[in-house]
Image 1 (cartoon, rainbow, N blue to C red):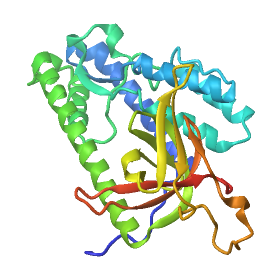
Image 2 (spheres, rainbow, N blue to C red):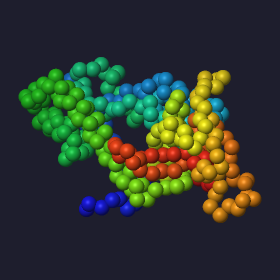
Image 3 (cartoon, rainbow, N blue to C red):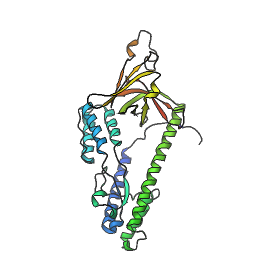
Image 4 (cartoon, helix red, strand yellow):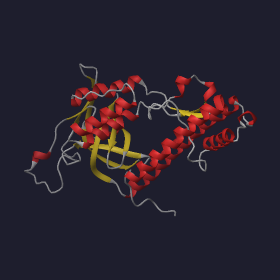
Length: 319
């Protein structure tokens, strides 16, 4: 309508969403089974390779160090069991949310393929913990589903040998769909970020909770639960207000120590504080993975348009 966004909130997942998803997953699984047994190598499947091992191990190590909790990443079943146990044993729901968000980073994207072009071991879907899977339920918005519907009809009519696409042609189409799907995902994510930036341009957030998910040499990644947003914070953008020291500790983990240069830093005094109420001031902030921070969220003024997150200080509020 030509207007800037007026509301911003994470999308809630309800029980009704989960129920429909279960039926869709089962339908996709059973159709994949039918195609494998009746269409052989032409079966168009969707696999999901295991995540990047090094990235998963980093989350495991940090969780053990920060919460004394072991995450079993052997497969998606043990991973889900670990997260379920964490949610039962941990009183802080934010911890579970942050660990889950951290585990998303090393995940690989799922991809389409023709069954005959890969070994059977490569058909499996890590996230769903099943040996094969396909996309059948959304032919009005996904071309692979259209091919799957046509293949399924061919198996029912016993006309697979007369199917107009060969195994290699189906695999070639699958690879093209992978490229287009990734491009569409990037475009959607960028669009979401642009609209969020426009919202924050007119509705800046001066104070909210942020949690550090990763520390680099000149940046660190912050997760903002109120926005469902993970983004990088650039240390050079804080040089006027803070002295920043990034280093590697004795255990090999990266840390950043932030110290205010003056008492005129946002967060040094809360609104309504008197001169004698200096208890809320802070002198040093040690940033490592899962550190809670107070951050401000605004729209970056320089192109390209994006969300800008700045450190305000240590987190002292309630989650």
